[in-house]
Each structure stands twice: as structure tokens, then as C-alpha cells.
Image (cartoon, rainbow, N blue to C red; front, side, top):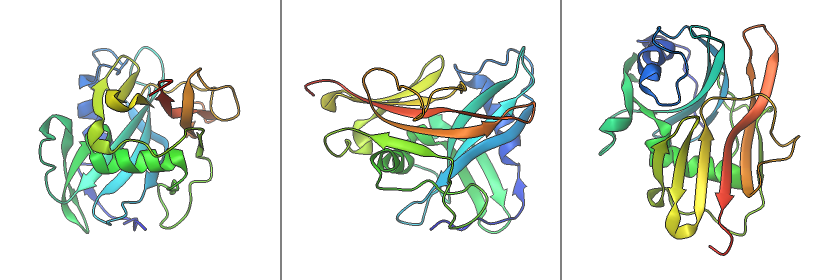
Length: 222
């Protein structure tokens, strides 16, 4: 069970993301600096208790129109070998000291636990309170067996999502980056979907939206 420390972060998560988001192909804010606010998300626990994992939803009002982005982050006490390209930045944690912050789509610990969440082997946790489930996170799985190992997936950023593909197994995991209100377990999922994760986030006008965070797809006959 991850322990949530209410302490100082320098720089803050929003400050790190303000610098990092414009470099992403799925960012829609234009040339101006993002104007970010925390809008939602959830955490996952590392069974080994070493890696912090958080799915952060940020709302950006700095572009042509408001947008919400899903940013899975991992927090590590040492650099992750071979993941320099996925480093969002470093921060000083008031309790844990120096933390290396990564785009979680490239971190095998987060990929493994996200697959476990889809399959029902892990539970989403509240972002801000220790040992409290995230009640508004939904998931489903209609597949036939366990997902491939995280090492079998290759991550690629696209225009609106990040695609993690394991071609040998015929499995694709898509992380929605630019969030769209609407579909989740209460509405028909995209054709070919064998699993999903959905959740809620705050809109700039103070209302709540619900939509897909991730979808799992399996090729027939794989």
C-alpha cells in the first residue's frame, strides 16, 4: 500500500508538466505556455513498494480551447536504466529526497500494474489519501488470459494517445492522452476492445466529466 506524503515538492508536478507537455505530439495548446490545474486521476500500488505510480489528469486553459490530458507518472528514487527519453524531470521530495519522474508509459512497473488493473488483479487507489480505493475508476476485461509481460510492449506517442503494442501476442494497449468526455463502461466501447479503464475529471466550469483512460485490444486469432 502506497503512503501519500503531504509534503513539499520542488518543482511541483504542475511545474514539471508545464515544461514537458508542449514537447508531446498529443499536446494541443499551441505555442503558448500551458495553464495547468489538477483535474483528477488515481494511483496504483507497486507490489515491491519501490515505485510511486500516479495517473494525473491536468486541465489546460492556456490554448485555443480548454483541454484535459492524462499523464501517467512514475516516481523513482534512482534513474531508470534506458529511460532517459521518458524522463519528465527530477524533483526534491520533502520526505523522500530526490525523485526521478518518468512518463509511466515507458516504465515497466506502471505498465504491469495498469494491465493488472484492466484484468482485475489490482485496484485503483485515491490520489490524495492512503489506502482508500478510487471509487470513480471503472474497468472491464473480456480477454481469455493474462496479458503479455511489460517487456513485450513497445510504446509510441501518437496524435491523441500513446499506443503500447505487443505484436507477437496480438495485443495493443492504448492510453488516451487527450481526454474526451463520454464513453466508458456506461456506453458502448470501441469495436474490438477487450478491456478498459475509465474515470472522472473536473472541467474548467466546475462540472465533472467521465470518459475512457485506456483501452485494451486483442487481435482475433492471436
